[in-house]
Image 1 (spheres, rainbow, N blue to C red):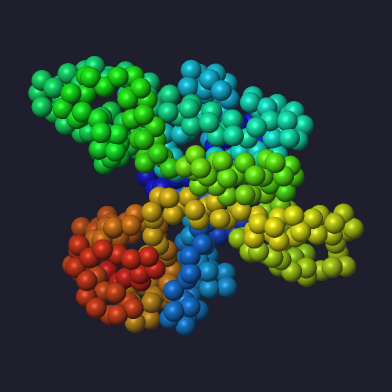
Image 2: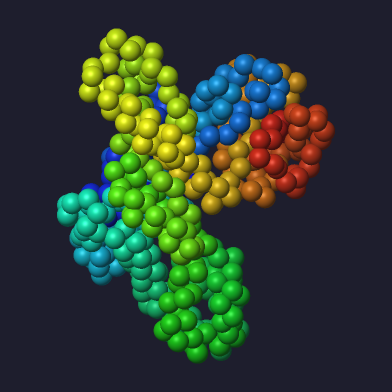
Length: 401
C-alpha cells in the first residue's frame, strides 16, 4: 500500500470543501497510480522542482504533471468520516472514522478558525466557539482509541515479555501493524518516556496514556489546517500561536477560496496554479460583478494576507512530515527517457533513506529481483544496491533481465 494522507475533522468545518479543493486541482491527470478511488478517496499532488529545469529539457510526464517546471506528484487522500466527541466509544460515525484512520500515514486536521460550529459540528455563529477545543478533542479521541487497542492484550504481552524475554516493541508492533505502527515508533516512545522496558507490567495507566500519545505523534503525524481564515475574527486568528505552542504544525487556509480559484481557472477566466500567491485575470469582460468582487476579496483577505490559500502548503507540509522524497527512474540516463521515449516520465514518492534497490522494487517487483546496479543521470556514476537516494535524483536501473 502506498502512502495515504487522512483528512480529518468534525462536521461543518469545511472538510469536504478542503477535500474537493485539494484533490480536484489536476483532475485531468488520468493515469493515477491508485486503483481504489471511490467517494471518500482522491488524489492530491505535492509540488517539487522538476529536474527538467536542471537538465534544460521539455519533459513529458506520465504519472504526474509539470507546470512551469514544477512537478506535481500524486499521493492518495482519504476523506475520513466526520468526527464528534465520543467517537472512540462508537458515537456518531466513530467506528467508520477509526477504520478509515487505520489507513492514513499522516493527518490533516481541518479546524474551523472562524469558530462558527460547536463541538458537535452544529452552526453556532461566527466567533462563538473556541477552535482550540477541536484540536484537543481530536487528539484525545485518537489517543484513547490507541490506548484501548493496546490495553486489550496488554497483560498477555507484558507477561510474555517478562517471563519469556520477548521484546515489548516487537510484540506490540505485531499487534499494531494494521494501524501503520512500526517497531521503531514503539521503541522511540519507550525511550523518550523513560519507561521500564524490562517490566512493562509496572506501567501505570498514565504511562500507557502518554505512551499512546507519543506513538500517535510518531506514527500518524498531524498538521492543523486552520480553515475559513478569511472570515475568522482577529482574536481567533491569534489562537494560531497557542496551537503552535501545543507542538502542532499549523497552516492558515481557505478551502472555499482555493475551490473558487481553481474553478475560475478551469473556465479560463483566470490564470492560477495551486499554491500560487496571486492570479491573473484573463477574461475580465466575462466576469460578473459578483465574481469580480469575490476574486478581489480572495486577493485581499487570503492571498495578500497569508501568501496563498494554504491548501497546497498543507499537502506539501504533510509529505514533509512523512519525510518522503521524489525520485525519477529512467531507462536511458543520457536522454532521460523510458522505452517509449518519454522524457522524465515518472516521479515516485519514497521514504527518505530508500536505496537504489528499493526504487527498483517500487517500479516493479521483477526489476527489483533482477537489479544489478543503478546509474545517477546527473553524474553518470554507477551506484550500488545500497546507495541512498536523494530528493530529486534521476536514476537509471540496470537489470540482468
